[in-house]
Length: 399
Image (cartoon, rainbow, N blue to C red; front, top):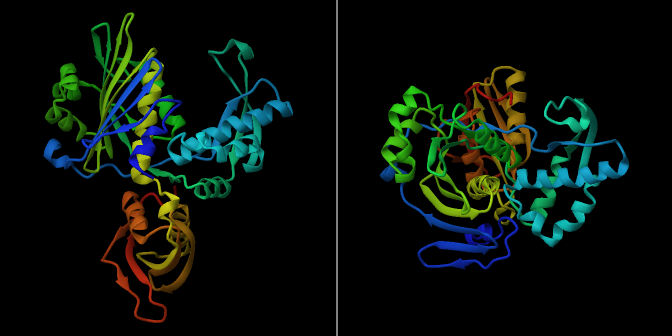
């Protein structure tokens, strides 16, 4: 899928997409203006040396949604199924592009067929007087294979549970009263950003802005993009991606977000204007998810079915063997996995892939279960197959 189509499809815009040779794209919207500038430069040229980033975050409950409901009637349950289905599609694909496709109109209406199980839960809602202090929720679990199959069938990406963490370094400017966003200084804003990130299943971090951070970064550094100072602070958190930006509000003039995302030798810049602060928050998280999904979600048009052998050393005992097998099955590039051979503490698995071996290697490197020992080899016995060699590093396989 092209860069143009990815960003043109965002949100409910009805504008026209323009692509210029310099790489700038813009979409005109009612009361909202967005400009996106994509720049590829080596990160080390701007940031200096970054330490190894945090390992990927394993996002749980990608296929589970909880919604508040007023009763247990069938009509409301089916309505909730449709709403939850849309949320799952956004989380798994990384954007709401699929929901705008005509191919998804029927699945949305018939969302019950994608439900694996559901149950009602009673939970307290201290801030909601409507339920008189008690809240009824509907917890819906969707069938992973059906959801992924639907997305792949319609050529939309499938984003697995292993996702990059992003450090949000943001200044919050309301009528020139400026704060750095943190739990202590802007708790409500952090909560709103966290909620938006959870909708897209994007793991985010916020600076503590304690004495150590304040000594490194000042409020003006965000607007002036003092990369040296920001980079020094970011090293403390070692994120996979870094988002720098400003949320600016002026009486009678609305709100604006000025954003920059950097990761994996890429930089993305854009501004966004809206009539409400919430619209700016929703947009930045929506685009952050889309940018990351472009890199990490595997699109169906890249699908190349292939089998290979993957040998893992230091697997002593059936428990570790099963853990690694379950881990490999959880990677969305893997279609099927079975044990091919066991020799002392080395277990060789036979994997059937949905994508290229390079995609598998990237996902494994991104995780914290296996560590590559040697370059890929070619089997010289029987069927000619690629052999990947890894060792079990005993971290995260239980996720």
